[in-house]
Image (cartoon, rainbow, N blue to C red; front, side):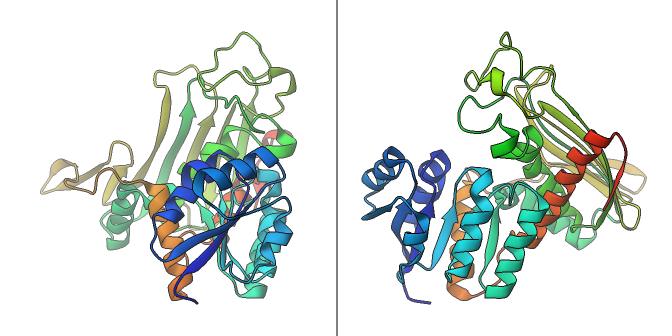
Length: 348
């Protein structure tokens, strides 16, 4: 690997311009060589804003460059698989934004391409890089929680349907709140649990608000006439060995908070919750609420994630959020949607 790692950006929308490009440009050993996007205003705007010398309409042309070693895929969900597989086959390492893919079939093809080419595939689950999740993972690995037999996961918004992009389109986004924000907390909880193998999923989806024009949009007003995703999904997941997980995710729900991103872990020696970070235990027949102190503050988890990706590329070490684990999340999401359609538990 050369001293300076060249990076290409596939998709010049908000996540690329707000997160990925600025994070790469903070790293001394990285140069953002090129950006691609079929929308002229997006690609030219990104190139001008960040001083990127090369802008492409077709990402395949960009991937032919020998001075690009790694790529961020920051396209809408329906383009993740095509762009990622093309980049891997062009000899590039890939950081693909979450979710890994629209479905497990696409995700499996992406992971197979990474195995076949020997290139790295990382998924953009930035919450894993937060000090809170990393703290919980350390305690879990130490055995502090004992046998972790149950988790309760929530990614909920009160009025949070995005009023831009393809978030309300099943065809383009793959689903609603579950595939968009639910995957973040699900991945974080599974990471702490050690990614137990899921064996069955029972799920239900609801569409109570999205097709109505009289619902307030705190993230902009969406296209209610073409709303084809769920505004809420719930699920019960069973794992090999007997552990279980309850999952709730919504774009819209009548609840107290504007947003709730949280999970709780229950073990026979201790328990914990992510937000606010707290752990629970018993010692000497005394119940303890344990609040970690002096964890790093003001951590931009997206930027830590991108620095981790580049470190893995530079040192040829495994990525921290591998495609294979992201595929497990996608399989669970697929099963939630399928279970909701069938009205019965889905075996994995």
